[in-house]
View 1 (cartoon, helix red, strand yellow):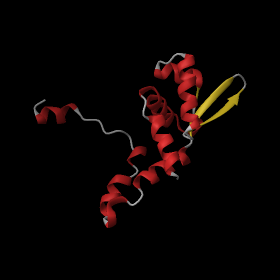
View 2 (tube, helix red, strand yellow; view 1 turned 180 degrees about the vertical axis):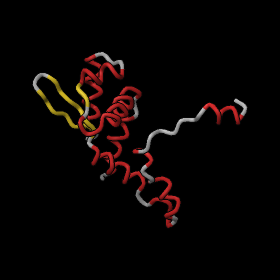
View 3 (cartoon, rainbow, N blue to C red; view 1 turned 135 degrees about the horizontal axis):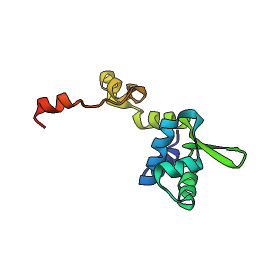
View 4 (tube, helix red, strand yellow; view 1 turned 180 degrees about the horizontal axis):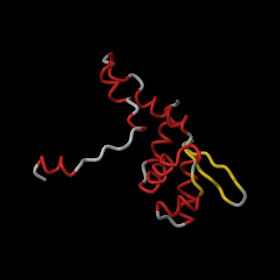
Length: 124
């Protein structure tokens, strides 16, 4: 990935609404979501949403497809992988054990929730 493409992707994500949109589309997977569903889930007005979706699409992070009157947006997972690879390029300068932690596929695992009993043990 070229540095300019990485900057475009990171710049697109450097906004609260666009980051929320991105995270919603991560959860939706490759099928994506309609623009209307995205608007509801992130609480954005249609014109504002349209602007943010266009920014994410222009950065290469999103794809769009039309089905009838609706437009569905989905992450371009390959582009995102290239962005992550770019960020981690030359990781750890010869210490692969550190990179294994940074690159572990934790994103596909269910989120770890702290149980009430662990809070009680800590005295909180």
